[in-house]
Amino acid sequence: MKKKLVSVVLAAVMGMALLAGCGGGSAAPAEQPAEEKTEEAAEPAETAAEETAEAAGGELADKKVGVCIYQFADNFMTLFRGELERYLIEQGFAKENITIVDGANDQATQSGQIDNFISQGVDVLIINLVNSSSASTVTDKVVAANIPLVYINREPDEAEQQRWTDNNWNVCYVGCDARQSGTFQGEIIADLGLDAIDFNGNGKIDYIMIEGDPENIDAAYRTEYSVKALTDAGFEVNCLDDQVGMWDQVKGNELVNNSLSQYGNDVEVVFCNNDAMALGALQAIQSQGRTVGKDIYLVGVDALTEVVQYVISGEITGTVFNNHFAQADSAADAAINYLNGTGNEHNIQCDYTKVTAENAQEILDSLQ
Ligand code: BGC
Image 1 (cartoon, rainbow, N blue to C red):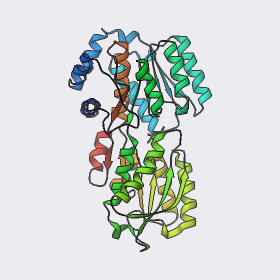
Image 2: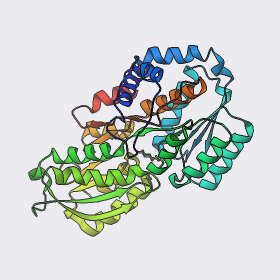
Image 3: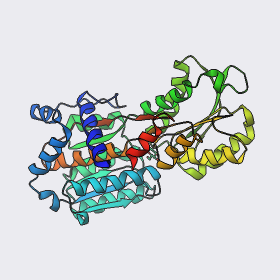
Image 4: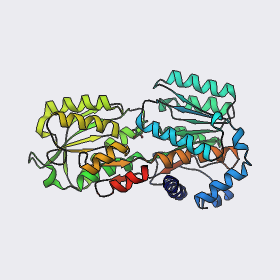
């Protein structure tokens, strides 16, 4: 089941990447693929994957991969790295040659880990930065060591990505466009209609926003585009509170508890930039005697299993599937493409999927 899903999403991702940026990344793709590369990208995913493994002639088993994760204590990145390791092994890498390290949310720690990988002479690096603003420094030292580099999850800014293109470096970013996830969150709420949402009858959607770590552009985009989807749909909105919960369940719980204590029944919608914080928000909502779907609404992003189960039971209004299978597999494929000399576009994107009570069971099945 999972394998089938992976093939399907991979085909979709590669197809979307071909359609120049898949929903439009925050950075200009501006890649100039060689002719053979364009042809190769057009092939069905499975065939291409088989071919890359063949082209590497089984040598992948000898290649060393260094993977830096910004923080192991992050639910979403835990799913991501699990899939990344599984898929790298499936593609022919040896488990003992894949080293995945925890940056513990500290850039100095992560920079030291990158230095170690460079001195060990790894063949390729996959990096989930702690601070996106460190991208240029990290890129410079990895490129100087002649090691191909795949960034994941925290997108370096446009100027940084332009350098990769201008210098024709073996550096790329793999991720999803978080504007789409924000838009989907807003649409889930907008689709309910004002009558169902406007419990206090002021003609507006009164909401609180719980944001992720500003080091990840996903936080800003989700915040902006969830509200934009409401105003685009013609609703008046009223922001009661906007707080930074750092993607963390405990912080999300504290912040929503405070907001609910302060604004009480006026809070009609709780937007959380991710599901971990939505789980914390749900605990706060329940502890204050409120009921999702009856006197308040709650949306997250990621489609963590627990959250999708809550969407099915109606305890969370909706979420947005942040496809860690597609992102991890594409990142691994990008690494393989560098190793076998095929190269990559500099910005490889994938799509989010809206999750509501209507399709939650289907999404849950695909996550198993
Ligand atoms: C995910 C969050 C995660 C963050 C880590 C986001 O894309 O939605 O759950 O904490 O990435 O950088």
